[in-house]
Image (cartoon, rainbow, N blue to C red; front, side):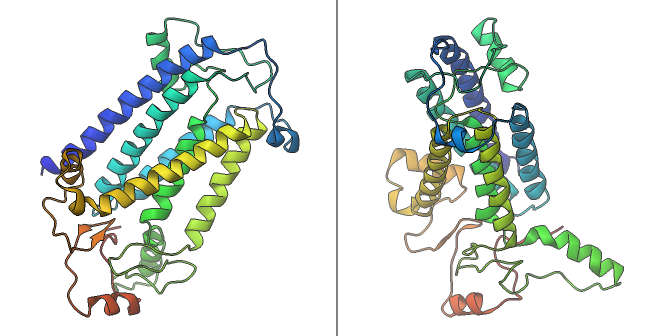
Length: 311
């Protein structure tokens, strides 16, 4: 039982180390930024009206972060999988950002920005981690965009409509119906799934999540918190890192002779999977019997691997 929590513990430690390193480098980058140079020309700044309330970005980010936790914390079958990958990939991107903001300094896009991180960098890093102090010159690329994008990807990669189960459960209680809650037909409220039970298509939640995420991007640009290119690169790198990681873990069995792969086999809890075993992002290597694929693809009422066992 304890062993199953070790990977999430590793992810948490890795995440907080990366967050501290990123915050520390933010202070150094801020003190090296050319504050005397005017903001660079930016199409996003030209098109969007300037909104002075830049704190909206922190509130929006925290809300997105908390909603992902609430979404999966009660889904016992996959919550450890989702959280460990989500935190691990954020940590990778924070380390990438630490390099990016340090090696190249851009002028500050926010008019009249005054840094509050004026103390010792190792101490100020803790204040920045918890959004108490702020810096101005750490712009390329946007850390807020990274977190918003990964929150959206966590929703859209693993969700199969389980977020509607509480509403259906309440409706059944109101109707005094004790019928077991099962996944509905693919459509607006439930995505199509592949033979392994992984979501394939967009559905209502996916659309709403990405609309909210794009609104967050627009807030970042409109408040002059970042340049448009910072947001674009943050989105692009988050997508590429997320997709690369998930492709990699689906091919771990083919690479198990590589030393680093052994770590990820342990991290993902795959053990020693067969080279021919199909791999689900939600449940890991699986054994699919002949004829199972057609049953899964054609059935709309069967609860697939990764569905919530409890609501």
